[in-house]
Length: 128
Ligand code: SF4
Ligand code: SF4
Image (cartoon, rainbow, N blue to C red; front, side):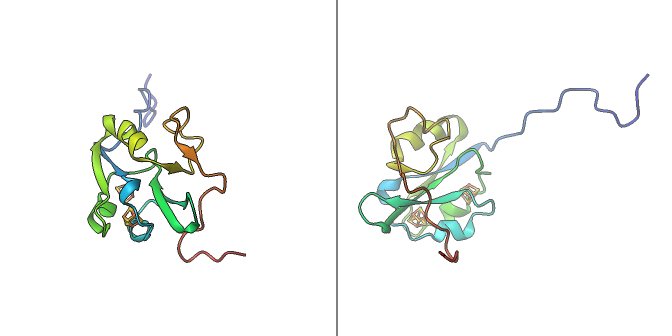
């Protein structure tokens, strides 16, 4: 007997985007324009290596990115690229200097420096 409306097969794995946005931190000025446009808030502010918020960077949490390309369109410094999903993590490993995602699988064991301070507050956030 089939119960009406019952799930008859295993749920499908969540579909991932065909391409993901990857930041080349070498060209990032920390201007935060991309953060304003990301609809899923997956762009994080990374303290810079020398002067924290004055030389900050940003990085994308690739596990959350939906591949909408808005950040690529609006980055004034053209330092974000859409990379095919299968290659994005490897490319991000070579383009990321500093990260605030120590739990992400692609950061662990990559040799990428993890900022001890954690992410800087997002634009418009009041610091206590
Ligand atoms: S592609 Fe879209 S979802 Fe992904 S980081 Fe850029 S703005 Fe955010
Ligand atoms: S818009 Fe471009 S330069 Fe500005 S913070 Fe984002 S990635 Fe860096």
